[in-house]
Image (cartoon, rainbow, N blue to C red; front, side, top):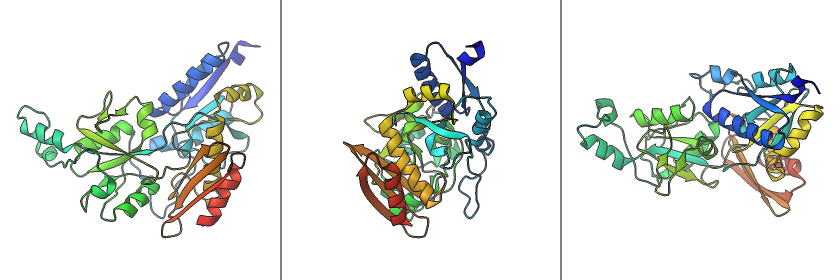
Length: 341
């Protein structure tokens, strides 16, 4: 074996979350295959270059693979051996010559509603020495802990660039305003903390956890770099059904690469793979991409796979739920898609 054959290149985006995920995969790889050298290769994607652009432009088709295409090119041109993705960003139809080689064990797939703490703002504004007392910031509105979507006053602004989240927020509270928001996790938190025009936002719990942030038992959002005075409410699937693949890390590889296939076997979590395969089959059958107004979440129970799904694609909300054998994920996803079309 030549020296270069012992170097495995993992392609990843350069965001803090992407790097956290890729580094976690690299740690697994190094532990399982100590004779190989695993190195990260950071690649900027089209989505990274569109930091000020909306990802939810009504009536406009955004390019598929917004956060994955450049990583896939690196795989096809042999400049990388493994591409590490947030699975929710990976299109269901992959380029010829590539495949989903493995899916890591899924983290918590729920979403988190984030908003300002009324008690914190009250204390900060009363403290004459506080740096929080600028005129613009003084108008910021805070709320009590354990706030739910329905508890916001009419006209409250909950920013998100996800069509899925927007549709579900407005179903629960038609009086909300739901403008777009861009940036990484910390950027969105800082915008919420500073901007009086925003009352809340919604983020994925898995991303928060992978960045070593946490939601305390009192509902505070804490972690290195998290702005002070933010509260968080974890939203169950009944309130905010996750998007397809949320919480899972996907490993994309070249089809037929036996060396990498052996690595994928050690990275793959079977139950997670079956669950997300059902979700991705649903999305593919619905004809949508990662920005489609649909949601699906599958869970393994004994030898069965149960899945909930919803769609706003063709007008009013449609919901569905079904269960099949764990060995029939594609059939489960396609069955629910037929029901919701």
